[in-house]
Image (cartoon, rainbow, N blue to C red; front, top):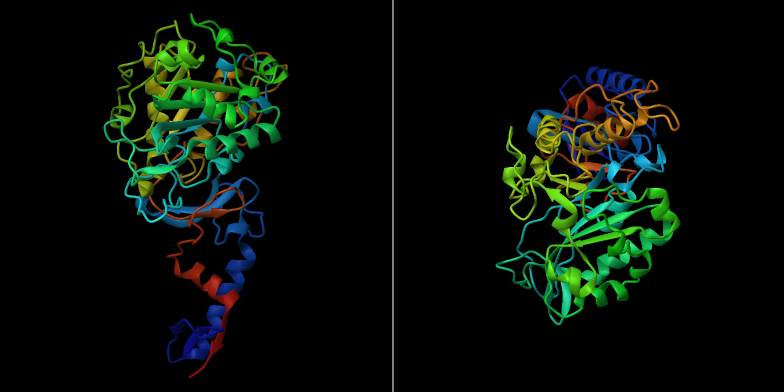
Length: 428
């Protein structure tokens, strides 16, 4: 006896006693489908089988590399801390940053050229911003008489490592800022542009100069930044930093390490028990710069390892870098594949960081506007630190582009539920 799909394109051979098997098959299908959540009612960490099972802000994904192959509802959106407590200086908050935000899996290749490079994200920049990312790390190069986003070989962009003209991504940022007048975005440029006034023209052409936070207002000796309320009221909602010191005098673009400290990127930044400063940066515990960027990603990005990296090791490294910075919480947490986790992941980590900094609570969702520091409301907190695994597939109602919409269902009982809803039984 065969159980087949309606078009008979896939079949499952049943035991000889087909009617008995069918009885148990339908019984368990009904039991499991009726007892499990579905249709947008599944909450964080609940088992799921389709993208539409999970509630708003969650997606259905799994992490097989940690032997967690059962798909669960996983966080896919950040809590914007200013929506909980507004009015603090900008440097009192922590924001999710995507490393090499432009280096997107399945990004269309250049015409006639197969891109040969590595990738760091799996979601469009527009969707990154929609999901709560507030910092973009962009590598910019002179290329084909324009400025492109590219991976480097000795400071040179090649057509097999180039992604797209930088203005395309910057126009996505402009659209987001225009449509979200209370949001602030930070762009950190790894700068290989030598065209005179090249970045000035680029940001002007992208329509972003109207949101520019002026260099003259940036605190240079570790003082607090203006409040987020003041920045929004003045429409100074775009912070731009460059790795090229000369651009500050030539184009009025802030030299990154004059205003922030930063730990080593790549493998040194994820080594347990150590959080060294980047060689261009001042010591992490220096108080002459008021912003702190924590890099947390391996030198070689491996997509199916990201949710393992975003588990307990992330929480441990946040604590390590916090101590290395003299008990200062990072303002920016830069990661690869930002949505990958087996639960709260990067979003949960940043919620905890914001909670401790802005209100003295275990998570930002426990903060109460107007309450004294340490006065926390009772909220449901994820019952584990961000734990994760590798690999897996993701899907859901959150903004996630790319090809990761297939749910891996190794559990035979769940496969039965799926088949029970979609198969017609044929007897041979």
